[in-house]
Amino acid sequence: MIGNTIIRLNSVDSTNSYLSQLVKKKELKEGVVVFAQEQLAGRGQLNNVWESEQGKNILISVLLFPHFLKAENQFLLSKIISLGILDFLSACLKDVKIKWPNDIYVGEKKIAGVLIENTIRGSAISNSIAGIGLNVNQTLFSASLPNPTSLKLETLDTFDLNEVLEKLCAKLEARYKQSLVEGEIIAEEYIARLYRYKTRHLYRDNKGEFYATITNIDKYGRLCLLDEKNNMRKYAFKEVEFI
Ligand code: BTN
Image 1 (cartoon, rainbow, N blue to C red):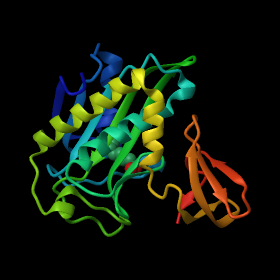
Image 2: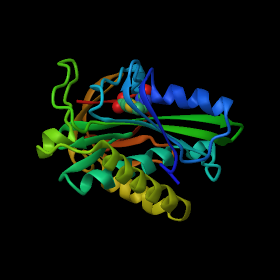
Image 3: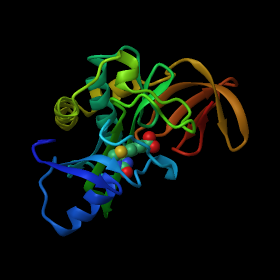
Image 4: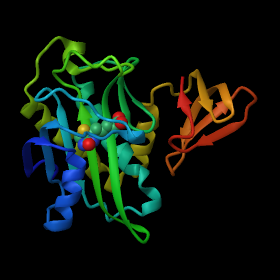
């Protein structure tokens, strides 16, 4: 069960790095969560740094053993984790969407980020560490972040982090279990909750800017964009930018 065991840390370099070291040294049960008050070297996607004020937010890493999944289907984990966060947030916020591949947005602002690190053995996933940074009670962010928000900024309420963690873990667990029997439904819901789904917007790839519409995410997790000349363009993460 996700969150049955919680390792609480005051300060750590990165909860993902900590858990990946620990799982090499110790036998851990699936669902172990590392929860830190502060990260000194929090990691984001694309080698970005994840900033978070001490004691204000959810900074967790969840250990999973998704042996039912082939390595080529690992994008399902992004869908499970994104939908779990979305389920939790949708209980108190409107207009929560998933910005492909797994940023969580409220309107045009980012409230959570996900960094999933899988250990692959042959064609199987031996373990997966799902790192989640969810902005909860922080209201001031560094000016270098383009468009951050938090639960407090959106609702004006202050949240108990332990309660948030408990509810979030329950939602993650429910989606993880659902994926065992209803992978197709997970895939459909993920697409239906995508930021900019089926609407025309501007993108940039290595050849320049273009208008296109998100029509699908394929099973490898590639973004399928239909451009204005009716060409279907498929992009892996890092190959295209939202403008
Ligand atoms: C992103 O949006 O770039 C992903 C951010 C992921 C941040 C979380 S915070 C907990 C976990 N530990 C890390 O070092 N990163 C993830």
